[in-house]
Image (cartoon, rainbow, N blue to C red):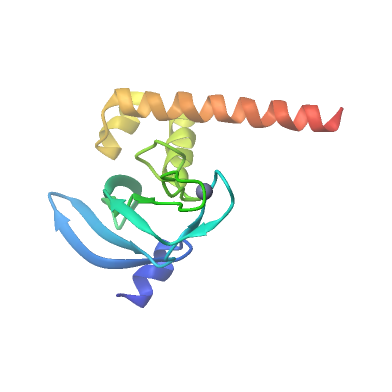
Length: 152
Ligand SMILES: [Zn+2]
């Protein structure tokens, strides 16, 4: 819809359908422009959509306002292997309700501030802030380990 918003958002094959402001938050409704996916089970391309159940995903704030993205969560039918693969997006970790860059940002914030301070400025419960921090820390340890394995 909006060329500038799409560019600012900076995700592949994504366009902003609408933008709403509600109680100091901005809600961006997104559309995915790719018609299909490669089935993760059998590597066959499918654009046979089974269902779409959008999820709300927190992203980085813009102009001091918190941002939620309404992201399509699409499940396809693969006629080749008879499975129902759910689309994976490169900018959200599987099963998470935050963009990768948001989780990264929260992790960095908690390293210099306290969980409570981040919770207040982000209007996000301390449990959620703590959860993001722990997940990121775990992920970074894992990446480090893999790096060490490859070196030796
Ligand atoms: Zn398949």
